[in-house]
Image (cartoon, rainbow, N blue to C red; front, side):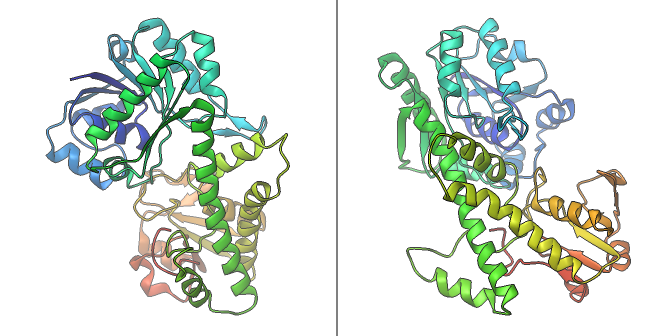
Length: 396
């Protein structure tokens, strides 16, 4: 049994911690005491059905703490899953949290393998290897959906580990970690790749930018249908019956959002600074255009009060970082529209200067128009007020 520390208890860190604690001793670390207390009481700090079920029903060797030093002191593996937000002012990820963990762990535990799960700019992992003179730093990108993070680790599409492939010891270290992940999954045959750190970092950015492109494509199809008074649902179904295209990631929205797609597509575009490109730039710009188009369509209704039903991107998520609906409501507010929010996750009465209503009935009564990135049965009695582009009643 290995001793593993997971730093960061968001959906990446928690899914890793629960996955690995089936067979190994895992300590999860976070700066937020409430999250730590929840995990120690077998309560999931995030909305994820499988994590909730595993914590409450499975025998896991998992504990949580705010004490980084005690957690990593003699760990065999330290998995870093801290946030890397995109900083528009410098056109790159803010890797401060990852930098801090790498620096601290390097002082406390020189023998453990450090696994970067956080999404980082291309070249970051190799720079870390050089800076700390440590070949046991590897990069392992995550390919998870919010709300389905543990499921996607239990049944992974692939496992990719980036390392110095020409170094025998580094390659073995990466391969060993890949085998650990495979052994804790429930999928019998998982495609595994051990590749260079730059290539692994590129896979993550290109994969998410492709998904952003697909969302943007069907959003532009939907915009075209709205302008020309066409049935978007019929067009999308007809297009997606082609097996080469497939019936997935095709449900229109207010724009791609969430924690990963907006920042990863921007980071990839920044990486193209010395490479000719049109498509990558267009993907980023398309999302801005879609949100402005949606805002204009709502403003055409001349509402006095617009109700925002849920800030989250997906129905079964508790994360609304960078959700597209926030940009829409900001644009509406700039045009003099009063914004009211219904978001049951929020306990406060205000969010970013906007009033929050906790009573769904009061919310529905007070608003002239209700906008919802994803529809809900709760809005079935106010269809005349509802503005949504959720054609297929699914997250994506």
